[in-house]
Amino acid sequence: MKFVLVPVLACALCLLPGPAPAAEDLDSSWYMAMAVGAMRYQQDGLQDYDLNDYRLVLGKNLNRNFAVEAHAGTGSDDTQQVYGLPVNLSVDYYVAGFLRANLTFAPQLWDNNRLRLYGMLGGTFIETTSSDPVTTRSGSQGSIAAGVGMEIFVDNLGIQIGYTRYVHESNNDNDYSLDSAHLGFIYEFSNMFD
Image (cartoon, rainbow, N blue to C red):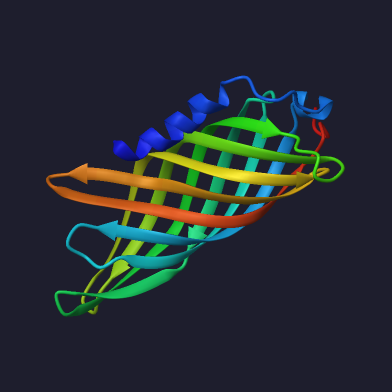
């Protein structure tokens, strides 16, 4: 559970009083993001699988400090040698839900700009398929998920960079994890749906 420590500390940091936000930051608003990233599956005793990550995010700012968001995505596939056999792993899809803590700054480097740091904690459900020359297996699982990131906005459009650990499991001395570092665009709808 060490991986949860960084996002929890980031969430706690976001609770500290920060600089006064612009008036529009105090309002709740919906937002949507699209991102691509590098996903890595790691398991004890195996080589790492390097996959691509494609995701959509829909979220709602509850206030200037907190938001809820949902992720839906898929990953590419990668093949590694396991005991002399080529084993292919693909992430068919994943869905995740997070409570997100935000820390927003308005550094006034340019008009209508904001810099927002965030930490999030939630859960994920993921479906994967692995295949070798003899068999194909599909599996699904749920896990605690956590992440951190940064967004830079000009008006309602922003660039987002972040890291999310979607899966971290440890059972019978067999640890495995699925992480993603991503870059994407985010758009806030300015209370369009309220």
